[in-house]
Image 1 (cartoon, rainbow, N blue to C red):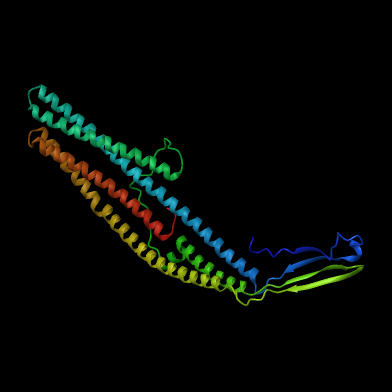
Image 2 (cartoon, rainbow, N blue to C red):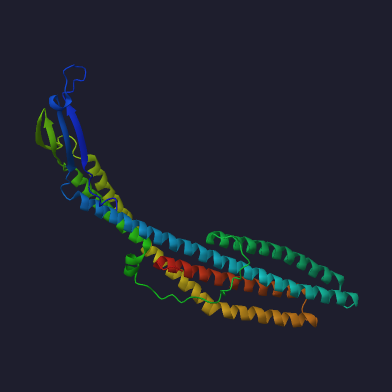
Length: 352
């Protein structure tokens, strides 16, 4: 809006030959009085070039806004999946604690009945204490992750349910890199920065061309009423805006270099994000189900064998820990896949 405005006119009021100290002084007949308007006329398309520069900067600001919105969405989404993952780990520990409590009760009944050694009960109680410490740490981490989620959202913490499951993996199709280069907000910002720098060069060159000031109005010379006219032109002998032109040209070089560097970085970022997403997806699809099934089956076999005295307590505890570690690893892998999906969407310039 400001760039498109034309220069304001000037009003000049002037009196000459004033002699108020003289007894014979008569203002209407002994002075020269002027009342005239002056107007600057801009040459070399200065107004249009100012508007072009302002439009480029406006587009740059709009692209920056879009970029920041996507970055906020990315941080919120990443914080969400971190909170969901830690909440799932806490829930797993709670279930494991119930199972261990049941085994402690079973061991106590066996010891009271004289069918089991007291050292086995003591070992299970130690295992329960270890698990209780791990559960407290997991619950603390889950609370902190939840608070971080609301901090990223910009709202006070609410009693909201994190309902999206970790297993709901978005399927992200490969995107053409050239299309990504044209649509990513940060690259749009960089291209508009180049355009703005180029427009600034043209404007600074135009500013080196002097703008004439035209004057026209009324003059009263003693008792005579006459017209008044004039022209004023700045002579660009020493100052031809050389410094600003060179500054703008250097800005073009810097903006083009920044754009070229960002294009290389975006290509690598897209390639890395895609490779990470595909690798994590392959693990979740091919390795994770079989690993979880084997761990559950192993725990079930060892548990039954332990109850009939086929294996010792340490083998049972080891099988239980293994199954729990596998489940925690599965949760973390699913959370990493969700995070990978977020990073891939951001790399594509898509809001997650």
